[in-house]
Length: 374
Image 1: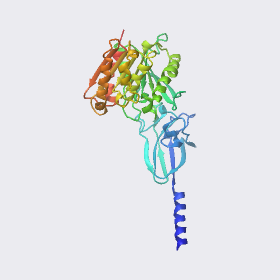
Image 2 (image 1 turned 90 degrees about the horizontal axis):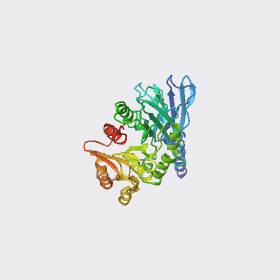
Image 3 (image 1 turned 90 degrees about the vertical axis):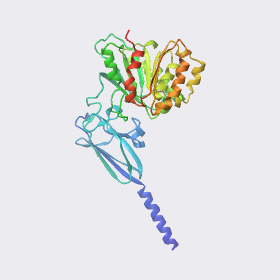
Image 4 (image 1 turned 60 degrees about the horizontal axis):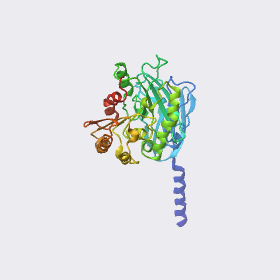
């Protein structure tokens, strides 16, 4: 009897060893617009797909006739989440011809599974919703940060027409949410449309917008942490020199501004405080002072000198997360407002929630404040 029980337990154990993995096959029928020299690859939440970080994911295998495929062995009950790309955030697959990238494929892998996808196009090839001329710098790396990120540069209306003209620069966080709606949030700031309209009407001066995509480290990079310090060092000492060399910019602090919302508003505030020799203007919308790990409010109580001779735009809504953020934004307003050498504009929007749509509706205010027509 004991021998039978032992053999049974061994059999169950052996079966569990063989049954602990399931096979996932991803098959992509690529659209005809796929460049012949490119590869198709997934990016997602598993190590084999880079944990959402380029360029660690590997390409699918070409099978001919625009079919790409590969099979992966993963633990049973693994949570699966991935998207199809050509190796960059800006080269994601589009579906149904609507110009929007799909939400990630998400499911729990309980058995051998085949997922077949048929994209209609790619978002860098499709006529995108961005108004005006843009340039992309994919997988931009830094010696201070562990993740690469995509950089998109929006050029003002006259940039291609006047080769002698130079422009101020607005550095903007959360770059994938600024110009179009092919992003995970499904909404955007409409920075391009709003800037283009105000520039063409002559209500603001022309400037370049530089969008810096966030990464999985967003929370700690947009915060008063050592990672936040390194993120600002990256912008100030690595990215800005590259942009000034590559584009026709006005390089001095008077013509260099920074903007962000939520934690992006917080790190914009830090940028102006820690790098006043680089930035003279900051727009901080619905700023996350409430979640700051660096206690910036105590720092500025004792020292407002870095902000002197600068422009600061602060605002906050009154609903959702903004309801919690509002008290700390008022405290910062009161502290800064004591110094007559700081040009401060503060606004409240009691009916506004905490999202890109709300920020886009009031974006014209910081635009006009930071870049008035001279």
